[in-house]
Length: 228
Ligand code: APR
Image (tube, rainbow, N blue to C red; front, side, top):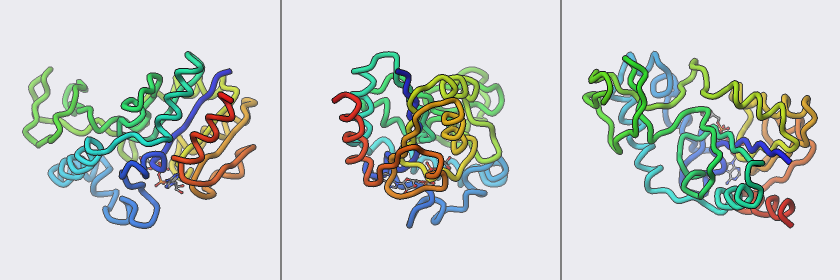
């Protein structure tokens, strides 16, 4: 039984990491054009570096919650059957013990050299002087996929979605593509599709089954139904 689990910011909300589009969400407090686009980075790199340093500090201070832990339990109980495809740039899935995690929007704790493409573990606090350990250029940026850029690992994700029997979306508003289109692809491929979210999302109609409530409650309960 292959299971693909798509997660969004809602799964980390109860770990203290704000979502993007809810009340007081990040995009209600920051202009995404300024802090999450290549153009914004070119215009004001210090503003962008500061924004991601603050998010990285929050991430480092956060702890996985019961939803992350339940998914790690599911993977341990079903070795090789479960893959998490996350839109999140935090590392709470990995810290909860999940092994098979695809970060399609990148990772806060990774740095990317804009000159040579080299990646390395990001220092907790990046600066404009942060130099690439490979080419030496001071052109480091957060290894995060910005608006207008292509998400990572899309071929592998497409293969996994086309082959899964169960597709689950957790804590995502279904407003950002290509992630928001994965449920429909899975359904077309014959998967049973489940939505676990605080409330209905933009893509709720795509799912066979919907369970609404805080992730820390609905995710462990859903995992229990599988592990029995
Ligand atoms: N439990 C479950 N779901 C929750 C919780 C919670 N405690 N809190 C909020 N949610 C739900 C909201 O109802 C909403 O549907 O999580 C969703 C969060 O939606 P967004 O803020 O839009 O986050 P996400 O869908 O992950 O955004 C997608 O957009 O900004 C870009 O690259 C960024 O990866 C991100 C992408």
